[in-house]
Image 1 (tube, rainbow over the protein chains, first blue to last red):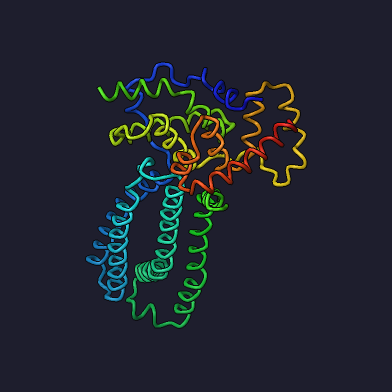
Image 2 (image 1 turned 120 degrees about the horizontal axis):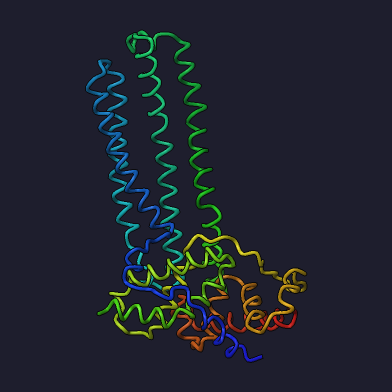
Length: 201
Length: 159
């Protein structure tokens, strides 16, 4: 068998786009995971700004300094996250697939996605306990119509808040990890495997 | 017009892109998606192409980098390390096929990166050129190519 000749004959008669033109090209969009992450980041930044505005309104409207403090912390976190998202967006932006060889491209791709996933998890660890406390105090005080001092003076409330921290924080972090694994787990395994295969002798 | 030149290049090299896409996907919809993604990436990179390499080499680079960084459905044909036995379904499905399909079936049973290396080799690329595109040493390319050819020979004899 002359493999070269057989290979040369393969697929040469195939045409997917018979009428390919500039209009078709202008309508094309990328489905590359990095591109999708970029889009998600932009959406997250938009939501982040909206959330910051809501936090600012709550800080302005609420009379309890404890709740204001918690929401100030949340606002600070959110601003830091938006700044981190902008920084990450710049890192993801260089996605020209012809700028490197295959091994370098795969490694770059793998590192970018890992960085994104780690950032998501770190955010979860830092953000959720404060967020849970803020929500708990706001809900509790506005629901009962009492001050934070009065609301938090009962030991049972502290126990419930503690249970919320213990249950909800790990649950949210687990959920973030699970969702990340569902979205990228197998994909990352394939990329890692291909990197290892290329490096192997 | 650069865009017209690009379209002509894509039109005349559709076969090359199609061959590569076919090595990494069995699903017709996925093949079309991969093809579109390659076109998109090529179109985006086209202004930076200065003609320092052959146009087919550039297209190879765009195609392979795009395909292997794309989320794809898992391949049904799983590479069997021992290669002692091929699944009966694979043998039966390849039994009445022509040489092109047999070659395709055999290459698709190789590891993903090995498929790229053998495809370039069969398209007449030198080890040095393959190593540059893959990002590995020429020596490593030669070693891999030797092993891939052995595996391919065994697979083709069994099909």
